[in-house]
Every structure is written in structure tokens, then in C-alpha cells.
Image 1 (cartoon, rainbow, N blue to C red):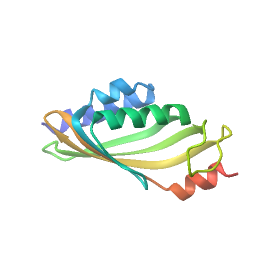
Image 2: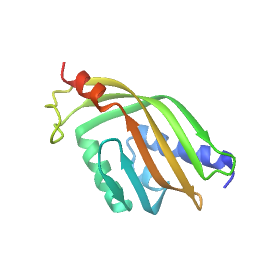
Image 3: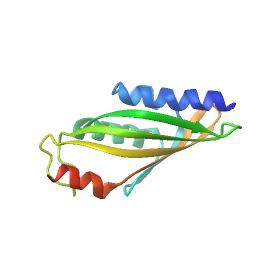
Length: 136
């Protein structure tokens, strides 16, 4: 897959994220998607990713800004850097109580692409920074 197509695929994925469109995100993924979240679980498959999106959709409202996307020449790997602007809506087990706190958090994602779809997503952010922001 050419680099330009990988850049467009990752852009579609994040555009769907910003539109709160989990089905649009899922359309960008392989059936056996590997999803790794910073200091969180490791999920395999679209069903687990769909569950994750459902949970995130009730606990958080987020928009990604300042998005910069990168890809290697053969299009098999990509990365993105962005800033999460969010609101903490419903308490996530093991985390501080949600009271509608807002946060701004630099983050990034790493991708593998296979057959024109995202086959792995690994997301990184500073959890301690997020906890400090929502604990104010």
C-alpha cells in the first residue's frame, strides 16, 4: 500500500474518532485488529474494539487537535501525534471520580497496516498527567 494511502487511512480513522463515529473507525480496521492502550489492556478483534469504543463513548468526550500523521514509504507502518481535548463524564473503575472535568493531553498512536486496513493500533499518553488534571 503506498504511503499516501496509509496517510489517508489514518486520517479517516481519526476523522471518525472526532465525529464520535465508532462504526467509521471500525471500517478502517482488520477483523483481527490488535489494540494496545497506554497502561491498559491488549484487545484482539473488532468485537473487543467495539466494546472499548462503547465504554469510551460514555466515560469520555474527546476531540483530537493538532493532528500530524506520518507513514513509511511502503505504507505498512504509520504514526500520529495529537493533543486530546477531553471531558471526563463517567467514572472509570480504578481512576478518579468523574465530575465533568476537562483535560488537555498530548498523545500519539502507532499503526501497522495490512491489505489496506489498520491491523494494529498502539496509543500512548502520560496517564499521571491526565490523573493530575482530572484530580484538581
